[in-house]
Structure formats: C-alpha cells, structure tokens
Length: 479
Ligand code: NDP
Image (tube, helix red, strand yellow):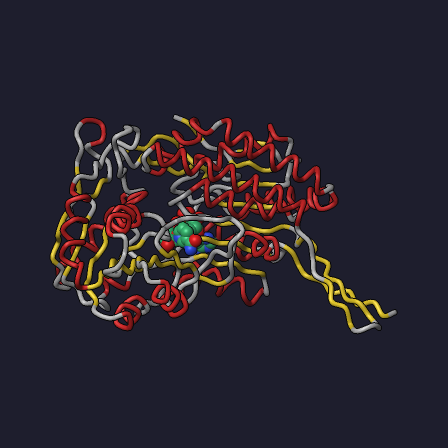
C-alpha cells in the first residue's frame, strides 16, 4: 500500500517517529494508503529547512519567482486528470468535480505568480516637505493549514500568495485528505522550486498543526477550517502576536424572492445545496423562499433533488459522491436525527445509502431537504457541512434578513431577485463577507474573500492575500 511522505527541504522524508496513520477511501470505507503521523520534531526540521532557504528566496527576482510559480501552475494543468483522480479517491468527491478543482488549483498558482510581478505599495506625499513610501516586505517563515473539503484548491490558495511575496512556507493539509498535497511536492521539484522554500508536513492537527501554531519563530498563520479550531488557534497565536488569517465555518442563507428567475434560482439552489456533498464552506444550507412561490419552489426542488444520482465518485453519472470520513458521516446523520426531534419534516433523503458492490461500505448520505423547523433552532444555526438543507418561507424582506442574520456565522449568501433596489438593500444589510446576487460561486480571484462574525478574521484573495503575507514598513523622507 502506498506510503505518503513528508516533503522537507526539497526531498520526501519519513516522519521522525516512524509512525503512520491510515488513510481511507470514503467511497469504499477502506484504508488505501498511509500518511505520516508527524509531530513537533518534523515541524522543527521543516522550520530549519525553511529558514535556511529564506535569505535566498526573498532576494529571488520577481521575474524568477513568477517563472517558478507559473511553471507549477502549468504542471498542475498538465497533470489535471491524475490529480483529479487522486483527489476523488482521497476525498469522495465526484471525479468530474475534482477536475474543475484541479483547474482552479492551477489558476491559484498562475494568479499569484502574476501578482508577484504587479504588486506595488503606496506612497503618501506631505504637502511639499516630505514623502512617505511603504515597503511591503516578506515576513519570513509562515504556516498554512488547510481543511479536507477542497484539498488542493484551498492548499494552493494559501501557499501561492505566501511564496509569491517571498516567504518560505510550512504547510499542513488535513490529515483526512493528504494525497494531492503530497503529489504537489513532486511538481514543485520539477518546476525548480528551491529546496526548503515549501515544506509539507503531514499529520494530525493537535500534533503538527499545534506545533506550527505554537512555534515561536513561525510568524504568521493562514488557517482555513472549523470555527472551534480557529478559536483554539487564535488563543495560542494571539499572545505570541502572530499575524493570523482565519477562514472559518458558515451557515449560509439563500434568499429567494418571488420576482426571481425561477428556473435559474432552482437550478443553482440544487448546486448551492449539494455540490461536493454540501461540503463547501460557501454552500447555502438555509433556503429562504418568499411565500408566494414557496410551495411551487419547494416541490420543484424536491423533485430535482430526488433524481440526483448518489454513488461511486469515479462514475461520470454520479452527481453526489461519498462523505469524507466516517466521523463526519456520523455527524451529518446525527444532525438529521436532531432535525427530527426539533420538529423537522424530511421532504427527501434523510438516510444513509449503501450502493452495491465495492461501494457498499462507503459513506453515502441521500441529499436531504427538511421543512418545518424554527429559523433559530440548532439545525438551522449550527454548521452541518453535508448534504442537508432546510427550507423555510418568509413574507417580508425584513423577516428574511432577521432569519438570515440569526446565526453566529457570516460567510456567504446568495440572493435571487430581479428588483435591483431589493438586491442592493439585502446586500448592504446581510451580515456576511460575500454576497452573490442571482448567482453562486462565481469567483474573481482579485476580490476579498472571507467572513464576518464567527466565520473568520481577515480576507484572502488578490491584494488582500499579498498584504497579509507581507509586513508594511513606512519610510518617511523629509526634503
Ligand atoms: P478543522 O478545523 O477540523 O481542520 C482544519 C485544519 O486544521 C486541518 O488541517 C486540521 O488537521 C487542522 N487542525 C485541527 N486541530 C488543530 C490544532 N489544534 N492546531 C492547528 N491545526 C489544527 O476543519 P475541517 O478540516 O473539518 O474542515 C471543515 C471546516 O472548514 C468547516 O467548518 C468549513 O466551514 C471550514 N471551511 C471554511 C472555509 C472558508 O473559506 N471560510 C473554506 C473551507 C472550509 P486535521 O485534519 O489533522 O485535524
């Protein structure tokens, strides 16, 4: 069985303690590879490699940095199919979806490779007697920690800007989905990334992640994951005055007004609810529908969702794959039980599925729609992060906003209306970092990305990421 290794100082190395963890294929529920159960000594080894590489990397010309990062992008594109297959087996997502995500992973590197060439800083002129200019300098060795839902997509979204701005990186993918991060190491060697500039340490959050966050000389942490993990990381890193970017959980509303384009809203809502098994932080898990179209929308949605093919992620016809891990599968199922005790009526789904053959032991859940829940009950306010949504009617814009804003989260929302005034009013009043009007997941990589309230602190994307991974230094010259 394949044994994944850490990528430290440009080479693949075993964990110092020689221990490995099982890596499962969610589609079959079986172990298919082993990953290093690394610990603080591996993080220290990565830190030594990164700090040795840093003086050279920070002085590498912008054009040379561009060439290497752009070459990584090209290699990701050239290996799209192989990476997508690996991602699908590791994560449980349909392989057709994994291909799109591998395209995006390449785009992440290409986008930040070009950003390295174009990033500029501000200057402030003081009325005829002095000028200030801002130096934006790399930080040093930084840490990037990413989750299991969009493994290579989110991993590269952090690493690329960190490298583009001249930092050296220690990165930890989720221990649940390590495979494409492992494969990335080889592409970095082929692209000519100097040894030690990127180091990938595999293992558990409380060991590897914690060693990174508490390391006194890793000066910035970019983290994407759950809110409770984010809270813990902040409690460790903040007293050390580290720079922190926290992209956390969500409980996103879809607000669908009666004057919307019904068919577009319906088709997109199927995706916002169940794409990637609902395991996207931007998925809309609360569907709020204006009363005049509530019954029609609900019936049409249930009809569409009943026909979604759930099964083997490697088959083209599978629209919904397997849930990422047994633990997460149990969690999602427990929320369906909770919804029942809270008075929810299951309109479709609501059960585990057991496809035939080698997938019988995999972790599949039927796409589930629930109605009849109070808008502020636990099912409607806690993050489930699976193929489970609730649907509720509303009568006024104010009521929709009250329902939408009632959770502790504030990541994203989508609004469906053909009334411009209503669209702008909701966009301005909704408590969330990202608002989509008449669309969903339409991404321009230059835009600020992140959440408010317990969905996070800081923004990724475009210049926001380039600024996060640099320190601003003001230089004032009197003349
Ligand atoms: P977790 O918070 O469990 O894990 C995220 C990462 O942090 C993993 O690599 C994990 O390692 C690591 N980690 C866990 N404990 C620690 C620790 N004590 N110190 C440092 N690192 C640690 O999240 P999930 O992987 O379960 O991802 C799902 C969550 O991510 C959802 O809440 C989702 O909303 C959120 N998310 C947010 C996004 C956003 O942009 N806002 C985007 C995508 C997801 P390990 O896996 O080994 O435990």
